[in-house]
Image 1 (cartoon, rainbow, N blue to C red):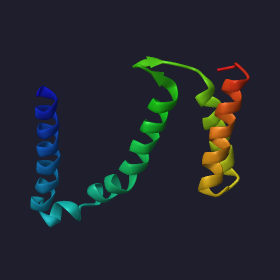
Image 2 (cartoon, rainbow, N blue to C red; image 1 turned 135 degrees about the vertical axis):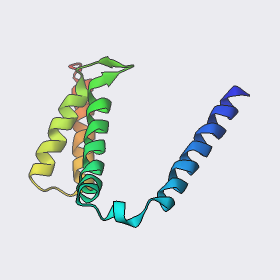
Image 3 (cartoon, one colour; image 1 turned 120 degrees about the vertical axis):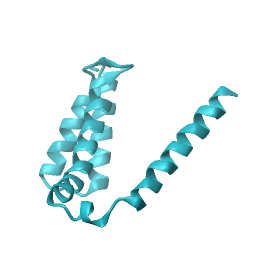
Length: 103
């Protein structure tokens, strides 16, 4: 039963946070700092997610085959490959590295 309480509490908190956004004065949203933060925040969060998912296992630092996949993805993005190609190349490089027993 405690899991359900946690799920309901998290749902209520997420709903409340979203609801609070409707009550923020529009003058705050037009402020230049708010505009810069709203533009940069998604990229920063995505970058943090990529780093955490690539370099950690169970809360500890790890260096394994995922790094090879990330490097291949960066290279493919740099060469302006389509997104699906980037995903397939990164997954293939990670799988090949694991199959080779390197990571």
